[in-house]
Length: 230
Image (tube, rainbow, N blue to C red):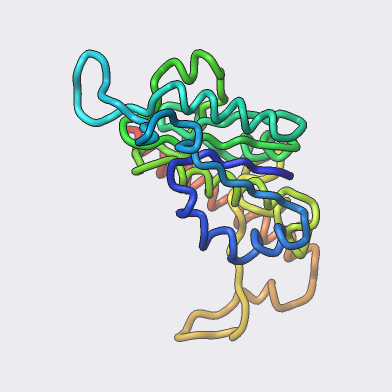
């Protein structure tokens, strides 16, 4: 699977691309991540990519011309042209169902904003799929792009050591439940013991216990979310 990241700060991704599962997936050619500096498509001596907003207001707005030309050039670099994702707090919320939708794509192009965001004509011309990782504002879309990549690659065959891991993640499966409680050695620590059912070796009982744990955690989470909305 290929990811093309369009950003004003490609250097932010330096450490991220060389660590953990992603680095191994890249090394094994399961995942390809290409970085593109939007400034390379800017015009003029100073490679200007932002300007003051018409109508006044604080901050700067990313200019339509370099962004659109960057996206179109990157789309033409490989086939398929890819699904264009704009990382923005105004987009639809990223959740597990969206992740599972995105992982079916052969190529994702992730457009990272900065400053006060993009000139609206970027959306009008390119018609990207706008996605948000939450109801808060970041300094830029780069961290959001990393979140998308991290979540999606878990579903790329061969990336995880155990293919069942992604299927058992929280929010996975038809019921979208949270994952059950996990334990490892030692069996007891400061008076807190591992539940006996997990040690007994009865796989049917273990499966039933885990299902019940996931159900209880999910119900508790939903209750907390409802209280937050009141």
